[in-house]
Image (cartoon, rainbow, N blue to C red; front, side, top):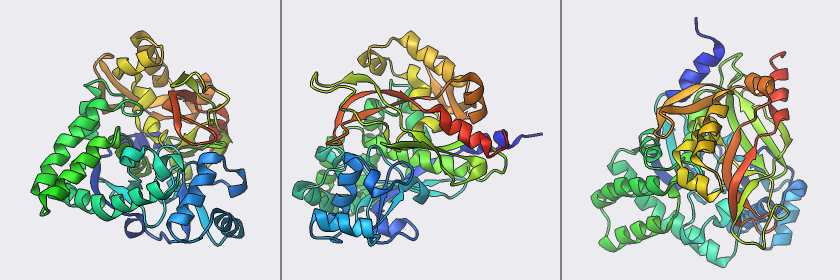
Length: 408
């Protein structure tokens, strides 16, 4: 007889997220409205937001024409005229600030079994994280966002339609065999994605110069597939939600102040604790732990899906960059297996000879005291820009609070 967690776990590992399009958020997110701005992590009051979120929601208000100045935008947010919400509550999510507004382009992923749709704003090309990832807004970012939504998104949408979408599980499975762990290293997977989308671009009815512009843009986007992965993780985890009595984790997100999880049996309820700090490698000696933001972003959902820290041994080059060995990466995978329901059979790790652990169970986290070790980019707490790479441990209290709802 199957247990509640085994049912939820089966839904999770059988999920088949497919990248099907790229359109404006207001067109594809049900119920979205122009005065609503989404951000990463659990919902957070504007007054408590750190730099990347605070600047990001103000920037989005300016981008949408809801306010003429930053001070006017702040006043409208505080008055409730401009609404803020957690992206995960709207089946969306992205790295960093996760800022998403009505007119911005978003990647669209559909989970084939459940039909669940999830979204994430794409990386902003040469602008890097831009507004969606780093909460940065200026005239250059505005021009770039307009170009992405008005020109690149329709072409990418048509290219994806021409090839019937891209199976993200298949894409990531191949990337794991080529040295990526699919959270902070996606060198091979980006190239695999580009080869697939090239075939789609070749088939669309558009001028050659327009096609070349789109391809040049995609080539400029280092780790474009990371944002694809964020939407895919949300779709996969949401497909495992709603199993009564199941404690399996279906969301892991941070807003720079709090970190929260959701479980299958409790639906959209958040269980939060103070956001964890990073350990890792900083790009410049001028930066360090004092400058880094506590965990901020929804990319941690990919960890709950079964990649990133769960697949650490797949990426020796990433481990070396952080000053770690392959042996340590293998040990990390073994450790993560102690707090998960099983493995994702689609995500094989060649250096491990096994598949990546997946399906985090709060009871095992609490029993062992082992918290998920999440890979991620380190963001500045002031500018929001990326200043390093590293890892953080999910706070233990999240899991204890979740278990209390199940009478444990």
